[in-house]
Image (cartoon, rainbow, N blue to C red; front, top):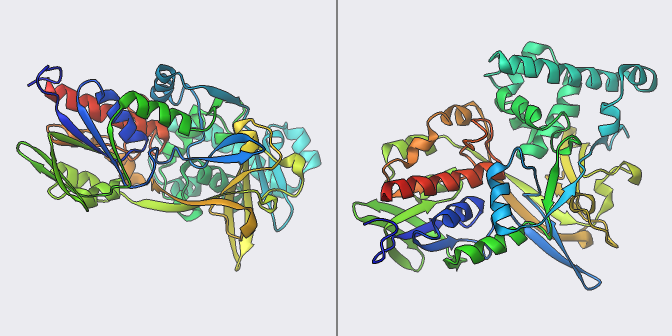
Length: 433
């Protein structure tokens, strides 16, 4: 029976209504009867917008997925175009600051010429400035010569980079991009880190030579339009506890019982998928076996003490350092008014893994997000990862896959998750004939 048969459309369960699940369901919407299971009480996953009321206005503030651009998010932007999702231009900009020493520098300082840096700034900053230039020049050259296939920490050791550069530049930029703690940055493939800067610019998420955009009204705007276009049976607040592949279909179990489907798309984190599959294939077991995740705490609030003391230094992306119990702790503070391009009476911030206390009365919402730990194992897995969906009743997708359009180093992003959902749906449709 084909997908376009007038007598039977296959019943497909999509487990997880984050961006990967939404992508798969959207691609299947005209070919299958879709039931979407989501353990949370809302769809969207990391497209999580908190809508704040201020003087009769609703401000949509994103707390995980925030920015995108057309070159690095080709499938997502095509999807946004189809849904007529409005975007807002975002100018970028970043600022580093040390709460202990008062040291600050950012986009403007990193773009200065050598003469200005030599005469106006301390030796500590000159070291960071020089090594950042060297890292981007040598990294690009080494990338094309295939000399970066190693953990980032090893690459920096071989290059003789200083601790100041590592902790006052690399760690701060990388924790914002991949949402992993400082100690895991050194395990990341050097190729992945260098490829990100090459695809954007030296400022990473805060790069000003990138046509960054945010979704008008917050990413909840695209989620609402997507769900309306898919029109699935949406089972919110209903966690799936098991998925069993059988010869004639798939059994999906929840606390309320079991239900039979023709196919299932498991659009969950890799570790969650590993726990859900009752009888994985050998390829699925091998693929999911060693994927790790890290949980981060994000807080939406109005407490300005997380920011640089000088308001004129506030940028969209602010990378802070502070010593807590004798240990230097980096964190990220997003200035949401600037990121989303709105004016408001209050200043709104999202902090990621802030090591001090945010004033309790300033907290609007606290959330936990998990992201894949991108290590050499996960990158090497990308060479074969899409084989996991060949000939199976259960297809897998999530941000632990890469975007085929962006090659193996586009892992962990909204684009990677969206692309993997699209590819899972394409594989299912190919097999339906």
